[in-house]
Amino acid sequence: MTTRPDLRALGYEETLAFVTGELGQPRYRGEQLWRWVHGAGVASWDEMTNLSKALRAELAERATLGTLDVDTVQTSRDGTRKLRLRTRDGRFIESVLIPDGDKMTQCISSQVGCALDCQFCATAKLGLSRHLDAGEIVDQVYRGLELLGRVEPGRRITNLVYMGMGEPLHNYDNVVRSLRILTHELGANLSQRRITVSTVGLVPGIEKLGREDVRPNLAISLNGASDEVRSSIMPVNKKWNLDRLLAAVRAYPLERRRRITFEYVLLAGVTDRPEDAERLARLLRGIPCKVNIIPWNPHPDAPYQRPTPAAVEAFQNHVKRLGLPVYLRTPRGDDIDAACGQLANRGNAPAA
Image (cartoon, rainbow, N blue to C red; front, side, top):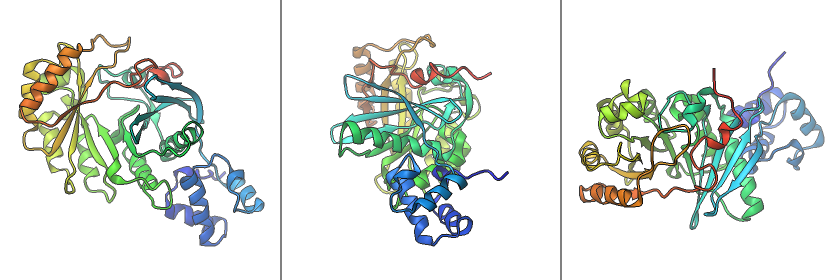
């Protein structure tokens, strides 16, 4: 029995080939189909109103339209909305919509769980169940747009960050495929300059991404300014230490006026000391970059503490005096399962 293709996961040319080759339809029908699947993000065949009923029936028989179920939406006092989404095999993932003035940033997931075991991360406690396919990645954006259309008509997603559940570069092929789909001019048409892929530091993936024809912004989840500290909270550092990671970052091709983002989680007494600020400034000297410092979002599965507001301000000011552009990423959604993975973890059993 031939497996039916999921149209949500097909690229543009693959969609055209399916429509012209498998269905025997003219090429323009493939473009119409692509616009419905990725431009409008429809959730059913019946919404494709400029396709004949006969063609829609054939599509329903010959293909699938991967659509995530919106299981839960939590809305914070600050306007942040966290979505728990159910996959076709009954797993749960998260996506978050974060308003900031005229901007609307969506944070999306790339895996069910994560294999990399960062000690401060709620998702890590789940373990890795599986990779998301490209259709499941892009449909998070379409479900986010659908929600916004109901609650904030006219509001669009302006920025996209692969910073949700999972390590994007561990699911490299599906993430890059999703980038090509989401940036296609006849689809969601998101700007590469407004998409950021965050990694804990998978060096081969960083090097490979730098050679792609689609190139998002790169963010490094750094979180420690010495190998000793970073290895204690991020086991990946034992394989690709700071020297190897920063060599790959320095070689990453940047267009004019683009910078690498370094994410730095502040854990009280672990990563927020004056000596940590000084090491951080030395480590990143000469790299076109900005640093986002993030006070840790507490969750019950990790032993750390969030620094006091005074300690956060002192760390930020110290780094700034040392010459790095540094920004405070204010915790969002503290009143709704703020830490990444908390909401999804309620529905997902830990991986064996």
